[in-house]
Amino acid sequence: MEARAYWTEGPGRGAVRTERLDPPGHGEALVRATVSAVSRGTELLVHRGGVPPGVAARMRAPFQVGTPPGPVKYGYLSVGVVEAGEAEWVGRRVFCLHPHQDRYVVPVTALTELPDDVPDRRGVLLGTLETAVNALWDARPLYGDRVSVVGGGMVGLCVTALLGRMPLERLELVDPDPARRALAAGLGAHGVSPEEASDDRDLVLHASASAVGLRRAIELLGDEGEVVELSWYGDEAVTLDLGGAFHARRLSVRASQVSTVSPHRAARRDAAGRRALAVRAAADPALDALLAGPTRFEDLPGLMTRLADGAPGACHLVTYAP
Image (tube, rainbow, N blue to C red; front, side):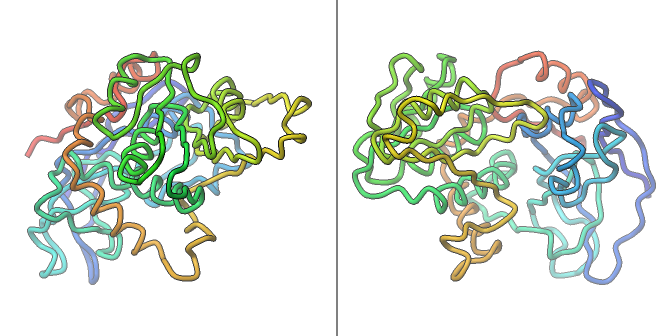
């Protein structure tokens, strides 16, 4: 068998390559992709060649081949149908943390079945929704809190969608882009510009992947408030002014990252339980507002260039011919 996969060949350059695909063995499944999605933050860092060598191994995707800056096959938001392999899996619609590829063979343990109320296009959000679940476990928002999400990209919007179901006093999505702010109302939040954002916040989740966004997130905190940092900056240096009221007001900044289950839940939850919560969250039709495209798989190299140049859309879909 043959498969076609998207490879980053070097900074700013990508191509669709054909490769040999072995048939599935015991405990494996052959998946025919129907749709995948571009995770703009991490995938564009890989596309630009912005992954620091010192953390490249730690930040590997589950089925990544090669190493940045390339050639590397990278990605982790794929939905498809099992065509062959373990009999009980054949015909199931599944999500997998696999790069952009039209057919692939993986262990069935790497697959998550999609329920009927989660269509393929929304199923690609499972990886990001799982990141959002972990972020909320790290952040631990409380009843009646005043919470802001700074950055209305894919991660920020998924975090906002989950927070929008909670009994908060006021939830704000802070972003300079009016189109992103307009999505907030459908997710249970108020969309505001950085200049309009409310201060004295109990909690701020930062997902803009910019130093200016992180600085604004810290400014919005009330005394003893906390910023939960979801952005990965790659090789970009971030400068903060911690010489003002940061210490006097006892502010905090902490990281959240999905590769490890939050320590606040690790004693009672595992990655499978976290994924199950993401599947439940994906049943919400309001999340369809996050989806852009689709673009044909054959045109993915050009799409990556356009996204790197600033083309709009939080989560861009890639579709595959039957």
